Image (cartoon, rainbow, N blue to C red):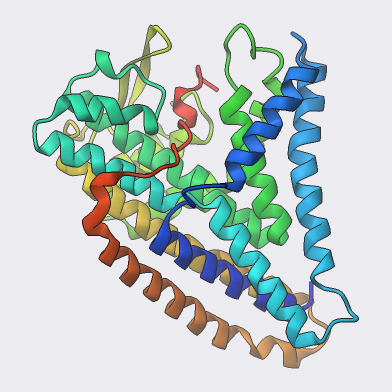
Length: 374
């Protein structure tokens, strides 16, 4: 990876991140929704109650998405094109891919809508909006349980919808961004232990566990470093991170619980049944409606730190591999561009915050904690 390619990706990632902050998800023609429809069509042709067809389904869908992104990325690097034009095309492609795969703004908007409803005492609206975040049965939950479900979903989806994608973007560029989101989406679609998907969805669930591992640990680390209670987050992560049935949701939810000083986990109801999960940060207090806004702020902080870490890692890796030392001089300017883009996105996001009650048109994927222990 040449340093100029890394700089183009870093600038594009910062621009795409700023677009997500300012605009959220596209209201129509979302690429992730189109991928979901295509994956469902492939499933209808391949479904059998066996692991092998499920593995083929995962390979065709996730592999096809990553391969298509790789071909497109290669096409914009055509040596025949002027260098400046090629670098600009790379930046635009990285920005579009980043904006398409990130879901942090929609996540926080949905959480904020529910938090506002709970604060106003409108439990009916909160129950109506909860399925936009997770798969629990809202009618079986009271105000405190809904608040807990929202905080847990914000924590889990910060890793899945933001940090994990940025990590894979740093590792593999645009194909990494697209491939991770494809795996993540497939897991949300078929990675359940239901009668239909227990075998067919096994490959998607396992691949998502592997792909999500680095992003989940980085999310937990950043929540610990950037949260309001680093010591509490570290203690909860160490003590309870491995107790959760999901290998990736556990560290993330535990670190958020410790950082916010609340107690997560315990009994939950979804899919027509009740499940008793381990308690995370047992010494914390019960979650209140006001903690939803605190969780959203922590999520946004973790996302910004993840962008900085991913961009820095991408540039550092390219600099180490670059044959020419002179090409490593660009990172300083790029870091300044990243900061400016994020600041601009935050300013636009604050201006749009007054219109939050409308919510997001795109449903946030259910968190991994809702997937029958996967």
